[in-house]
Length: 363
Image (cartoon, rainbow, N blue to C red):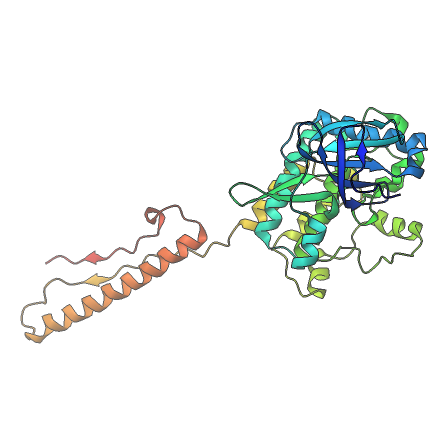
């Protein structure tokens, strides 16, 4: 059911238009009648609102998100039930921008610098939630929203903690544990073992591949109408083909070292993955941004006589001077190339360049 524009929810939120919809609810742009502050109001779909399990999950999102203080997690302002329609709702800050699913469709794939920015901010959000014992379980491009900072840079916000799991809460096991997006779900989400924050680390690995390549890793194995148990079996086995090989199939070259990183981030066994999302992203940043160093130049000794031996013709000094000038020009050229190479290789200053000494012969 779509609530009509102009409806007033909970006697204080005027709904202006629907700006998003999903399998669990709809999101409206709204305005607080007293403060006139723009906001986003998320309402649970009517047929789900009658189910105690979904109702509880809906309000758990508001409670969990309200406990988290991070610039990278959407802020919850209010929550409750509309008395007139018995509709559960959550009021959140109004975001302006687009989610990464839409941005990816528009740009096809992201540059390496963009991927590092997005995943660094995502890891920052996860470090806060994981420290509080909360795992997201459904990280995907559509749940990552990008706004613009005042300086024009991207500001990532993590959305939808509706199926997040509190580690101490055992009641969310069973039928609800498999909820998520299969392409980004860790193998243990299809089983019965206890979930840990490394579920989200797995998703970070899959997101990195998707962002860099523009395709999901398991895209070739997945069809929408396929039996979910077949896909679950594929995911349990883990990625069997190196990421770089699969990326080349789509015409994309991945950074050197990405295969090892991806293999560790998405390992089928949780203990074999990176322990934290922060650690995973820091390692990805290091291997992606490092530049290969060139081999240092080997010093060469050059004999340059200052005076010719007695008895040589007067033309010898001129010739020697010409040779000396040519040699020094060559040295300066090599030094210039070395300086440029050093800059590209990451040398801090010209003082770190290898020297090219010239030995002066005694008179």
